[in-house]
Length: 360
Image (cartoon, rainbow, N blue to C red; front, side, top):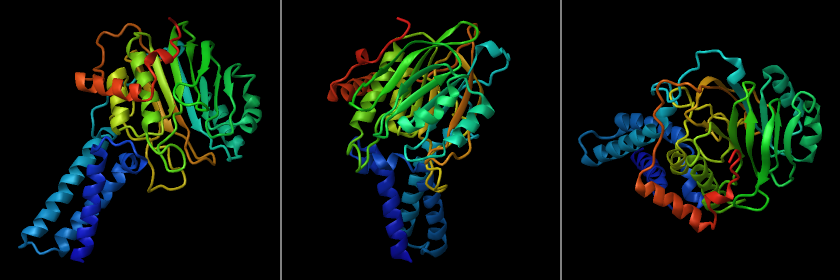
């Protein structure tokens, strides 16, 4: 039993320390994802250590201390995405429907053929904007039934798992597709006009993940997120960035994205809303995100039912607040973090000038 506990302790220590290394290889960055799962394993290991180890041995206490420190480190990352944390975004109170925007984000999984389930959710929840990821020509044909109610659209069907479609009830302005870092990996940028006439800058993104079957390193994903962050940081327009970021909310890259952009995360203090993997509850974390500027309060956020994809859809409703008396505290980057962001973009040969800036 002691050898077994030593093995599990060593694994927990490795899984906790590896993400501190800035190496972008998928085998390192992959440990950014399962922090909650590692925390659960660490908790169980501590229980077994206390039951089976010799309390009179210094080595036993070293094992317990190492596991306890790792548990604290993992929890520190995930606790902001629980009800135990202070909410970062205020709940909306005014009820001004003309200034509300509801966005449904759904990675449909290209081989999935259950388009009817997604269409039913759209009809049920009536989002103002639907964003689909991994949607190919087959999905575009199936979703054509939405065109009558959602006449404003940007369609980019691809069969490489990076197709992207935007359907909107609200008018879209200056909407355009862009390939910010990699050919074949599009994003969509534009303005959406609320019923009040106010315009919101929007960015829909789906960077490629670090994985043995796609990009061996996270460099491309990181660079795309960083240049979008640097672009929106220079703008005081109301802004929303949403999509499948192929990254978790607590990773170094997403935290840097938030600090550089100054955007808020409505999940903080409310829950993780883990959207992936839909089929394996124990291996589940938040990959689909919506971040927004300080101009919004939250009307609601929820994970929707399974549509046959490996992702659950995410539904988020925000209210634009133009006359806020006090601004919420937004994330901010220090000089070292800004330097790190410039380095990430420079290594991929991209810059914030590559990101479309609608409204300018």
